[in-house]
Amino acid sequence: MNSDELRQVKALLVQDLRLANAIENPNLEDLQNWLAKEIARLMDSDFQAFLNLLYRIDINEEKSRQAFAEHDPPGQFARLIIERELQKVVTRIKYTQ
Image 1 (cartoon, rainbow, N blue to C red):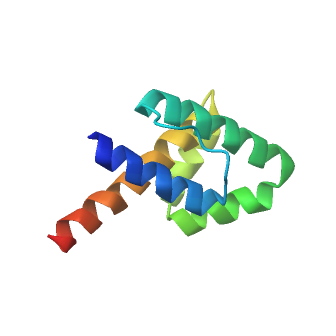
Image 2: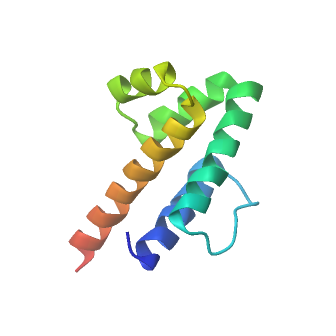
């Protein structure tokens, strides 16, 4: 993932999670760690909103089930969400050229 794609993924995450406290100029690992913390907070405070987020971002249901079964669900969901948002960014870039 190049820096422009990473910037666009971050922008999508901020938009989809309706957050204003995103980290500045993150690398992929920082972005994933930040997102995992936000996901853990959301899972603890409003689980239904978390499920709605997964639906809105279009996370595969089978992959979601697998992530819930893992040792670190927030980290797994962060990875899945970043992958999905990156797919959206790449698709947009492809069709705007």
